[in-house]
Image (cartoon, rainbow, N blue to C red; front, side):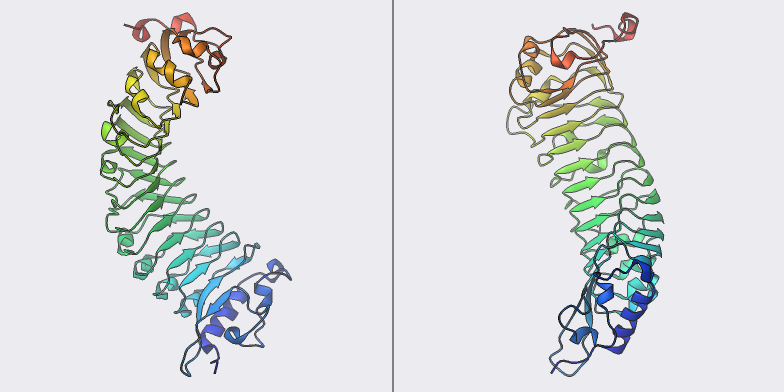
Length: 385
């Protein structure tokens, strides 16, 4: 025999609905189907959409186990009574207009495995008690107005595989995250985190740290052997884009653009090399000659080294790549000189730019569209040896 819903769960659902502006509850929405004249867990058909319940084998009360609202623009607050739904394993409120703080009572939800609050207007910090959610595997609070620092005890979430805090106003230094030993995706992009890159779990496959105020070097990343995607663009990182980073075998996309790097270290990968397909290193202070060894990266198709301080000629070895495997090549806004490799004059499908250099660049070559630097900028320290 089906048991009725625990009274505390029914009351919590009612309070969740009452905290929403009724003008934002459309006739076709899930919340409009919450009719409290019937039992939530015994309802059928089109009633109480967006919740799931367990079905106890004994005579105990049914409990709500999932809250998955439709993305219809609900406008209101997430009431602290959410913490009374202690059997919840999943919360999904994304793409609505929830505002105010994330309730501290969320720390009561010890069975929670997925928490998705993205694309709302939540404010304030991440509740400190979140470290109590030992079963949490997936947290996404991106695209809100959250602030404060990342709690130092966040590493207690040892089941976590996905964490996105992107597009908020978080700030402060990042704590040591090695305790998150199962984490595969870490997205902290578009915030105001500063200081050094912390120690990170070796399980990581995707890192998005772009658009913060991080400084220091890339050294903490060199041991991440499972990494496939790394974006640290638009920060204040400096020093070398070292051979340790360039040699991470699994990385297919590396974006280190718009930082303060001065050196790009590329060794010869004529044997089995990295899987790198896209290298974005534009907008740095990279100096010296263009690295010839880029041509030994067998999977590379997109190269962007624009807006740097490279000097000298374009290596002849680049010529073979523009007519074979390279699809995009941006070398504009450097101080490159001399003639182009002859292959650049052949008809190819490559996109890119060589503008704003000191090159002998015939206008009939597609990559040469755009003016070269005036002669006064192509002498002195930028003269080819």
